[in-house]
Image 1 (spheres, rainbow, N blue to C red):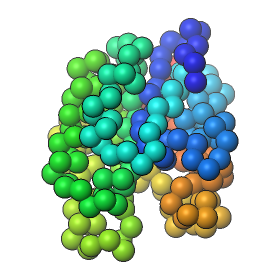
Image 2 (tube, rainbow, N blue to C red):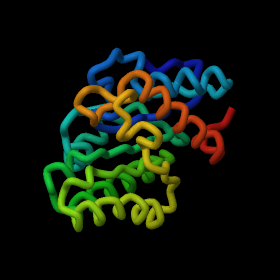
Image 3 (spheres, rainbow, N blue to C red):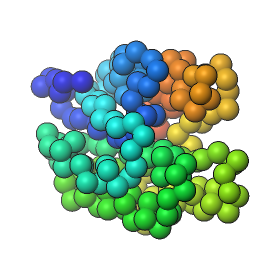
Image 4 (cartoon, rainbow, N blue to C red):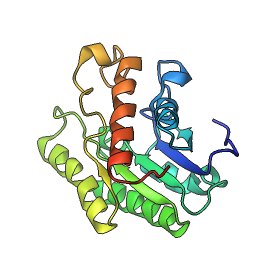
Length: 193
């Protein structure tokens, strides 16, 4: 979306195919729905949908400055790095280091960082799955940032709320996600009227 000068602050929605409008209309993606929900509640934020399908955390880190070039202190970044690292069984140490560097870089720009907790299918190696789920709470605690409880809460595993690939939400699934995120931002006093 284009930044609306009437809106005081910007929320940058980062990052992969869960942020993209994969398989649906762009207006139904969670960032677009989130902006509408906030505006309807008189929270004047523009939500920018920055995504790159199938890429991993290292790509976001390398290209972060280009994505937030129009940021200003007080803006918000919702970082949702899904399973692309995990599905490729990449090093969790490297993933944790990359996400940590992303958080640090955003914080240096005085952008408030919100981390979305993600999980990968249990069908992957059990030990890897368990360790993957620990990364996000560890980072949230280390950097003292809010952690959205499981980003796909109420959507994951429900065929009626997902595309046929059973990994990406459909319009109804994103409606739930957008409302979950909006409630989190408002309840935690992250967004201000």
